[in-house]
Image (tube, rainbow, N blue to C red):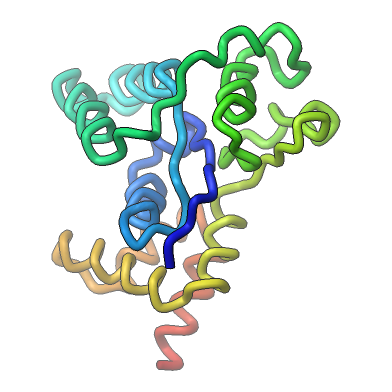
Length: 185
């Protein structure tokens, strides 16, 4: 399956390495969606990685460089002029502006409160928790999603269930669903 559905990944999603890893693997060919972000989003990710997650600066720099290399078309620019007309949480208006400018109708974020339906609906944009979107992708393409989880497990030298248990800390329904399906297989 090849999907050309643009999805903005908020900084809180990109800064959560386990969730980011799975989403970006699902955005690799054959992709289930096209990831979108902005320089401002990537700056927030970098700041979070260094200041809150205690990553070394060189590691955070490398992460950003690899994102740009792996997804050269993901970085949207020229959205700044839209920001003054937006009414969602002020600190996250740049995220909505990036979605509007890139033609994305979906923002994945853990901070749903910063993206009210009232602020998003005039722009035909919705905000979703990453877990809800991953459950939809799994419903649409269960084999592809399960294969990407298996690839993560293989790369880390873990069982699939261990990867899902790690993901379960932030994506409990998604992880439970996949673990249950693995047990039934």
